[in-house]
Amino acid sequence: MRAITPPFFLLTKLVSLRDERRTRLSAEHHDAEDIVSLFVEVDELIAQVEHAGVLDDVQREFQQTLAALAVHDAVDLLELWLRDDVPDRIRVARDFLRLAAAEQPLRIPCDARKQSS
Image (cartoon, rainbow, N blue to C red):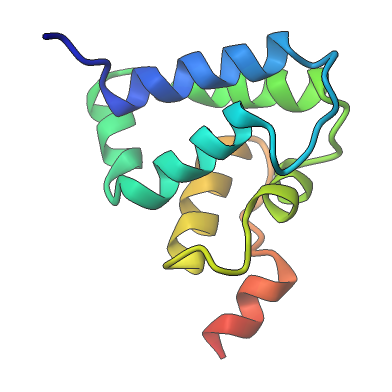
């Protein structure tokens, strides 16, 4: 049996989400759930993306997906998708924003900052 690695799974989910932009963007969207789950479950996702040599591709897909969904920035998307009960929210938010916001400064969503206090 062959399985897709996390970096390429992330890329396929981003492309799928962008292509399905006609559907209503919501926290319950299955591709959105899969993307957040990947960030939650794979502690070293950024290192895996870098090691696979697809960092630029992932960042470009995030930017194209944000544009296609008419979302102002990655923080808006993260606040929609990242539920309060997600374990290790700060790490997940940091990693998500690092990959999603290639051209934007890293900002932790307000509710994630409260959690670290």
